[in-house]
Image (tube, rainbow, N blue to C red; front, side):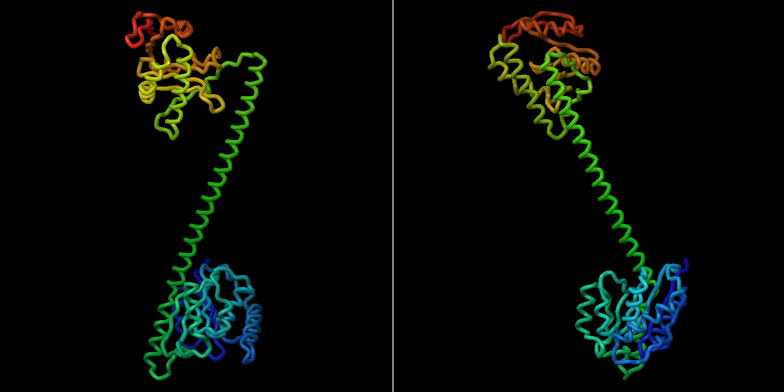
Length: 392
């Protein structure tokens, strides 16, 4: 791809050899650009600048039809006076992309072509130019964030006409400020970076939306599957069918996860209800009194949960080899939930110790069935009840 193309668009009585366009051509030639000067628009002079620009643009479309603008990395239009309107009309009619405009002494008709989508390196105008409303130009440049080089006492040629050195200095200031090829390249780089950033943001937003949609779909499918499974279990229960526990419903309780306090409270309520009912030979006051201490120990213990349909049906915990609790909801007994939970602790600890009240025949049978052996019998001081110590 070629580096760049500079198109020089003069005013009606300001040729491509006049200072602003001449030195612009020199600067871009040194920078390696091809230069295409428009010597004439082939239109008769007229006071109707709008009609003049329209006719000139149509003529140029025909003359430039063989110019391959897309072969250049940078395409720059340096425009003077009515050329500022012609250049922008040309860009629109030919549907050219990535044109950078250098605007010298625009006219009132130029205002309608200034917009945020237009790439403009800068605008130069004289404070005494009678072909432009300078205050309106200042306001437009401020609104669009465009550099405005305003030459004090300068006319439509940016010349005061009284001091040639000042006029030359003004041209030098304008060329350095908005017609340096490096400025054009910096604008292109900035635009490319902004485009890349926008594309990256769009890609990230798309990926995030797709991820969210996928998560919502997966969640909906999981919920539907859980509801279907729950309905099947409920139907099986009503039909009196046996529903075995599934090891996939067991998970390790993480004390540091969000919502862990709520889960612990649910576990402890199940613990309290079960002990009050199953071990009624001990007063309810005893279990209520020990609630906080057991909860504290459970918050430190290694705990496994058995869940179905987001409901905790059982749990088992131990502090190293010492069992703290193993509880299964009354309506879910004899499905193998307790055995699965116990197996998880066995795999983790290797050695387990448990204590069971002698009067709790169901619990004693459960542990014996799971290969626990009685090692001692003691009297518990707090309750006066006999307890059996078991090892696995």
